[in-house]
Length: 542
Image 1: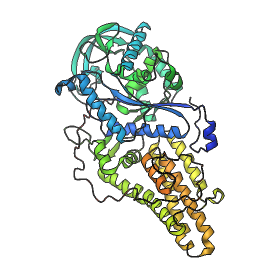
Image 2 (image 1 turned 180 degrees about the vertical axis):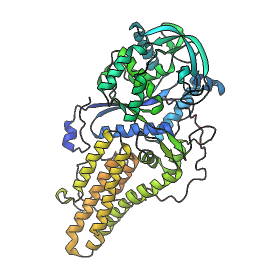
Image 3 (image 1 turned 45 degrees about the vertical axis):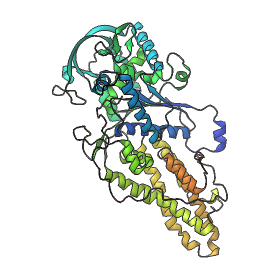
Image 4 (image 1 turned 180 degrees about the horizontal axis):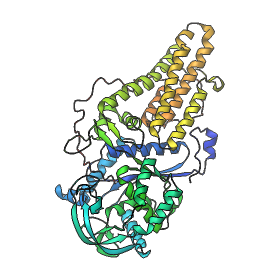
């Protein structure tokens, strides 16, 4: 079990003392590059980014990994359809992923590609090690194969003769393949699930996969003889390694296993794999069994989130309703998009994207609540104190206790990956700060000199609360955090944000009120609910 993390409240002395930071390793799936990234990919990656930024606030030494899965029959066919080599095809799509992550302000520490030589060579070594352990053998596979999902299925698993995941037609396959002895590890898997009930979350997903694990488990095919675009099996170059095995191994190949073990020894086991619910079987059964064969400790947690619909409809090519994240960012900004995705639905459940809901969140939560709080406070600093924030007294701060309680609740929710609940807690404090203004009526206090000391306390407490809010929202909306601190006068130029929660406001800070953070939006875009840039919507998100 991981050690208890330090709270977000950090003073300078604590930061100096934290020389040996606790490591924290988190991952997204590596995304399948048959086409460009869509809203589902961005949801997973934004959630991971928020968690990474939050853990860095806790003084953890964070390693945040994402990347792309670039092998397999589907990639090969997609490349052929546009008259490109597989290498050229994946290079083009990967550049689009990196561009989207940059636009979304994703702070990943590494980006691994399954075509990277470091990954290819390490996968070959691991495959050979599994073979030498006696857990890989040559056999014959006969059954059904779904090309879009890159998945093998038995007849009993099919849904009316189709893939149970994507509902597409499957191909009948009969070929010599190498198999992994998954059945050998069934007992160990069951024991692990009993011993670590928190291993898969949320609980509904844990129960779902556990029922499958306690059912009869067959060995799985882990190579293809008919697919050339992949990593060759080191003992038999007529076979390529099954794309899912290739992909799952990225979590340890990125850390150098077992080549340069420095990062692996520092960061493994992973604190959390964040994945979509459709790939839980691969992560909750196959991946742990591989690690057991390699005698490697299992990850501490696998957290599965739900799917998104668009305007109440399932995302599909035939409906033409897929949405490119860049189009939303262009219209409404990066932070508004990040906020909406993580506020709108509890993490782990399915969600629905609609422009009307997004605009409502921007106008109400971001504009009326947060934006107006900053504007009102800075206007009063300008009007009553010539733009200089009055001296702050911690002992006289009436919002201090509420701010600390908010901080503690944020810690609790984010420790459990409850992003929407953490945002609810933050917005409760924002509401309290707005009510603080109404209750204290600083415009009335400003009318007489006798109330001047009280007015100073109200305004300085309010300024400190807004600084606290900027830190609270930093993991979710880093750009907004910086903008708030610039308008408060804390930052100048391109300085990084001040993230010292307990640090008092400097005396005599001059505020620099700027444009409203989130101007009101009056109408939806003309193409609301329609396709902007059409990505492939296959459910395989590796």
